Length: 257
Ligand SMILES: Cc1cc2nc3c(=O)[nH]c(=O)nc-3n(C[C@H](O)[C@H](O)[C@H](O)COP(=O)(O)OP(=O)(O)OC[C@H]3O[C@@H](n4cnc5c(N)ncnc54)[C@H](O)[C@@H]3O)c2cc1C
Ligand code: FES
Image 1 (spheres, rainbow, N blue to C red):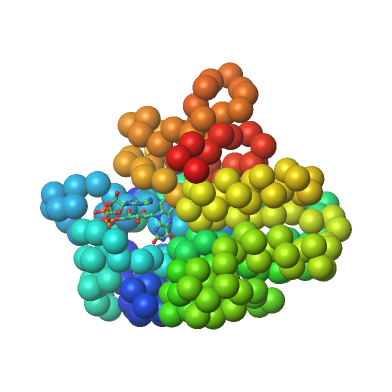
Image 2 (cartoon, rainbow, N blue to C red):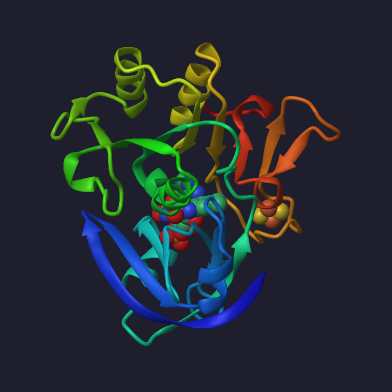
């Protein structure tokens, strides 16, 4: 894990209100695994005080990318960064997705900015020889960020692009019509969506990993501010930052779904 000032290389709006920010860090690009995240201090000083967590979206040679939508103070500042600006990063953090193992078909399901860990995940799965199908959902077609992904199936809430409905309903329909054996599901997105994916995975007995992106403060297991309820285990709660953000769907209880 490193903590470093890094130089912003580029910030680009890739879909409505959705930005990709790239920066240079050979250390991070060489060590980050799919599903891990970085905690970003957006600027020096006290505003905003806390670091903001973002999944690593892609790495390419010495460049690392994150993708985010503008929701508040931190992301407004990040979207306004220019080439050469400095941000401070802490990472890579968290437990990565399990990309090895005996499954042959990987089913990636992303809701909204849940697309964030999918390109780096797809890259690793491809290298491991897995077949990949990607299901991506958004409120509307102009909020889809599908670069660097293949075999994509699209759902939008307003029907402006692809299937009219939720991405989970689309995945269920597709997989009913095109069953995939020896499969594993990887999902990231809002809690309600993850709960639906988890229920679906259980009903068809496909192993499933979820990446949780709830609110977080320290990102390193100190503040106890990111609990998720466990189904069983030594303690009642797991910390999303150090024991996640990826979890086997059968090991946690998603509240607020
Ligand atoms: C492990 C992890 C990985 C993440 N990866 C990404 C990513 O790749 N791309 C991305 O866009 N976001 C990601 N997030 C969420 C991201 O960290 C927040 O959107 C960001 O911190 C908001 O900062 P802000 O200062 O702009 O907003 P704030 O001013 O902090 O908040 C603005 C509003 O957004 C709400 N909010 C803040 N954080 C979240 C959240 N996590 N979920 C739902 N609502 C929230 C607040 O309650 C408030 O209403 C991730 C979160 C975690 C924990
Ligand atoms: S964010 Fe502080 S313990 Fe997880």
